[in-house]
Image (cartoon, rainbow, N blue to C red; front, side, top):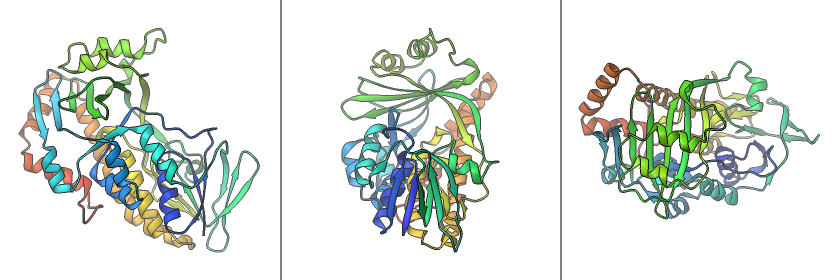
Amino acid sequence: MRAVVVGAGLGGLASAVALARQGWEVTVLERRPEPAEAGAGIAVWPNALRALDGLGLGEQVRAAGTVEIGGGIRTASGRWLSRLDAADLRRRQGDGVVLLPRPELHAMLRAAAPPVTTGAGVVRVEPGDATAPAVVHDDTGRAREADLVVAADGLRSTVRGASWPSVTPRATGTTAFRLTAAHELTEGGESWGRGDLVGLAPLPGGRTYLWAEVPTSEAPTDPADPALAWLRRRLAGWHAPIPAVLDAADAPVLVHRLEELRPPRRWHHGRIALLGDAAHGMAPNLGQGAAQAFLDAVALAEEATADPSSLAAYDRRRRPVAEAVARRSRRAGEVAGWRSPLAVAVRNALVAAVPASAAAAGLDRLLGTPLRTEEPVR
């Protein structure tokens, strides 16, 4: 059985590894001259680690990363609204949250995946059907027949755009900043202000990953005003150690206007299957984008056969769960971004009033359990 994976990001490489482990002959196409994963840090939650176990990479990722030291949600002044008990999370889930540089995770997947054909942007895909193979046409003029085409080419997927033209990204109204710093944390977590949020997480080697979100309407637009200097001014009054982390930043600040996907009604057409951001690009507020892509990869490899009707089982297994996670992530971002003093006061009081047991149960519904990784998310 022949599969063509379009896109060599985290999801595309994960699907290539998973399919190869199931005996597929896999070709990975990447339009860039050299695959690379732009990013600062990444939080690998227990459900993602279980998926990586299925790819044979879980232990390598655990060994390379730093386990979350605890966190929760704070106000901009530093008052804790809720706490994450890292030891209890490990007890319930069998794993903690592993933090590592995103490029390192990408490199591990790249090393485990079949070779990537670079500089091969896909221009057209004939989806095929039960009697005819799919055909992938790239911009070098080559046509490749396949029993399965995995569209893992991101939020603005070229493959998806041809067969699902109405499924388009939409702006969340927020802009994200990501950076790393030579700073050792004692506690991580996320802090919510009035319209802004800031997150901190430990990385290996005594380093810190910082991310921030601000309303796009207030994000810097002047090229002469560097993003780091702007962040330092914007967050100067926030609680420790946020200003110190910004002062210790020693890598470029990555700035992105955040978008999410209008969900397609199904994830397959002919022999094409959508995966990762091409299927469910979501706001990053729950740290579940990569995790859901890894779960997609495992499920697709387990369900797909040379018969394209098998893709319906993949759709039934993954789409409802991933869409529910995306909705929950959207709601979390909306609540964190509330701005009026009254709304912020009400939000903070409600978050603080949630019992720890209820918060833990909600997190377990999001992550599933070691025995069942795809429970309904409410």
